[in-house]
Structures are given as C-alpha cells and as structure tokens.
Length: 301
Image (cartoon, rainbow, N blue to C red; front, side, top):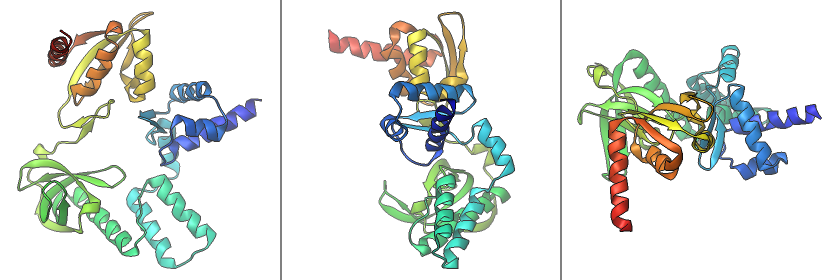
C-alpha cells in the first residue's frame, strides 16, 4: 500500500540524515527492502532535490539540501548555540529521560562530538566560541599547546582563523610564522586565546576545497568530459555530488564540466571506463592521463 511505501521512504530519509556510518546492508536490513529498492529510493530523493552523498561505503543526505534549508528557516540553532544548550543541560544535573533525550538529539542533529569529560566539554565549548568570535571580528588567535603528530611537538600557534569545518572539529587558518594556510584540529589544542591583532593577510586565505571524488586541496582544475550511458550511471551512483555538473548532450551522451582538486580520483574514473568516456577539456588532465598510459605500457610490454 502507498502509506507503507511512504513510511519506508521517510524512515530511510531519517536514517540518511543521522550522523552514523550506514552501508547499503544496514538500510536494507533495518527497513526490510531490497538493494534494488534502496537505489530506487535514492534516485527518488535526488529528483526531489535532496543531496545524496556516497563516501564509500557510506550513504548520507546532506543537511544543506533545499528542504532542510527551508526547515532551517523555521527552526534553527547555530552549532555555537547548540553547544551552549548542551552545556546548560550538563550543568543542571538532571538525569531524567527527557534531558538525556535532549542531549542525544543535540549530539545527533548538530554532530557536536561532545566528549564524556565535563572539563573537556567546557574547554571545547570555550575554544569553539573564541574561534567563532575571532572569525566574526577578523582578529588573530593563539592556539595554545597545539600538538602536532607529524613533528611530535607541542607549541603555541599564532593564526588568522577564517573557517570552521567538519562540525566544528577543525578550523582553517592562515599561520603567521609559516605563511601557509593550514587545517587545525580542535581536539589537539589546549586553549584558544583571542588576540588584539587584526587580520593582515586576508588576501592570502585559501579554503580547503574538496571535489566530488573526495580529494582536497587549495587549487582546482576544471575538467570537461563526454560520458556515455554506462559511465554517467556509474558517476551518479558512485559520486552523487557530481549530479550538479551533469548535462545531457544528446540521447546517448552527457557532458560533465566540473572542478577537481586532484587528478587521482577522476583519473581512476576515466581510465576505468575509458571506452565510454571522451576527455574534452583540461590539457593538464590530458597530460596526466598520457603519463599514466605510458607507464602502464612499459609494465605490459
């Protein structure tokens, strides 16, 4: 019956928006649906305007989908506000079921990654609040006692923070001493101290960009492809974030013009389906493919 189908669709949508790593088998087992029906529902969600992501092997619906943005206008807390609410709930000492459910909802909806230690909760909230304030006022901060696993050192970093990332677990900054843009993890800093020093290097700030193949970098290249039916189906299924870049060229071909941060991901895609793909644009990418093909020839011969 239709209402049974609608219930499955809504339950699937709820699972896709939770902050959990669910694979295809989890959805099928929980909802008692076949893999074929699962992919059918995903395609329905995409057509309805939801942004379905596939980070192998996990599936999610992005919370910046149009529907959620509209809902956001009605009921919304910033993550800073959500952290404040979480702190208030912790300080009440109330262990009732209602309060526990509120904590769980905040953690799930806002992906706060709240730690068990009350002391660490306080420090995390303090650090996030100071970083928000620094970004808003465009002033520098000192990341106190930042631990670097690469150099195995702990030191203070003077930075210009300009973007919080990944559910407030990381912050993108311009580091004054090195003159480089870096991504710092909040879990590795003991404290964040606001400084009375305004930004002087805003023109050097560079976001950490991520392409549809989940490769990140500060630089991007635009690659243009002409795909057949097989390759466009694989692209939509394996990399749903690419949907926005797909345009139908004729009955049997689709044109894709999209930015990439690395040639590795898109290179694997093109070389794996080379008989169904034509590379139309990006000389650097063509050179990359030619180099890969030449190396492959030397190994085969």
